[in-house]
Length: 92
Image (cartoon, rainbow, N blue to C red; front, side):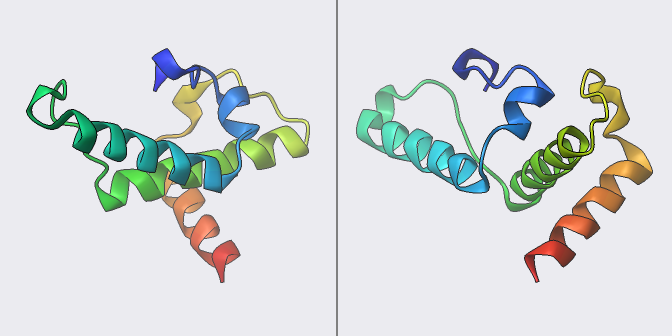
């Protein structure tokens, strides 16, 4: 992801959720097209994907409210759980 430009929370905050879905779809299609020549075993399990989307949602909220986005370490433990729960509620 970093090689594709997803290297800061600011970049993540500027994405739409559909951009994450498109990235996953693109990687899957590329791996299928490459078949046995595909490098590595790239998967997108449900929970990590949901957590990434929640992190994007959290980062967008941080940016919208003028809070700093320079610390990835903020998105751990209880804050991670709260962000995932808030993201799920906002989807409803």
